Amino acid sequence: MLNHECIKNALHWRYAAKQFDSEQKIAEEKIYQLMEMANLTATSMGLQPFRVLWIKNPRNLKDLGNATFYQKQISTCSDLIVLAARTDLDEDFVKEMIQLMEEERGLQKGDLQDYEQTCIKFLKGLKNSNELQHWVDKQIYIVLGTLLTACALMQIDSCPMEGFKKHDLDEILNLEKKNLRSVLLLPVGIRTEKDFLLHEKKVRIPLDEMLIELN
Ligand SMILES: Cc1cc2nc3c(=O)[nH]c(=O)nc-3n(C[C@H](O)[C@H](O)[C@H](O)COP(=O)(O)O)c2cc1C
View 1 (tube, rainbow, N blue to C red):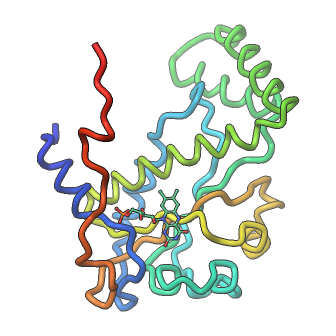
View 2 (view 1 turned 90 degrees about the horizontal axis):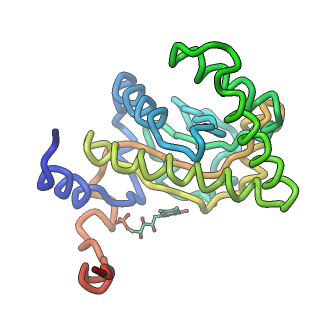
């Protein structure tokens, strides 16, 4: 187990990089390990309504600059992770997930039938009240949190990003055809002294102001 000091140091070490060393590439194996962490993220009802795209050579993507407002962390990153929401969250989606749960846990087919109905009802309710997209986005922000912490612990630099033209990126990556839509970006790379933010102090409100302790 990692101790508290180790986790705290890693979270202090990480920062939202505005520029990476474009000459350096992160080992594929390390990014793959990061993807394993994304896969281990908790999601509401265990439904994992997302996909993670790993773009190994983002500089090959035409029009990516325009879709991301020419931000340097995109043009200099080693790899680009795109967190995308599934747009096909229908009954079949739930049935597939429940089947996987039954198989993985050595249950009989149908053992999770009640749970399946609960999930179907839950998603239908969200869809009817136009909250489905919001719910999926929330799940994806949890993935981002997992990845940010994992990056910190693995000494991979990153920048969480919601500032990009989602529709444009979806077109570039042909996401609609894959029943996906982009939600968040996580360019990763290796820090550079050229980044004006590298040595800036981390700004956080004091813990005793943030924390409200109740008995
Ligand atoms: C959900 C989310 C979206 C963000 N979007 C952007 C972005 O589009 N562009 C950017 O440069 N930074 C973005 N940031 C980075 C924040 O500005 C940064 O995390 C914050 O200022 C705290 O600094 P630190 O991460 O270096 O501690 C985003 C952060 C989060 C958590």
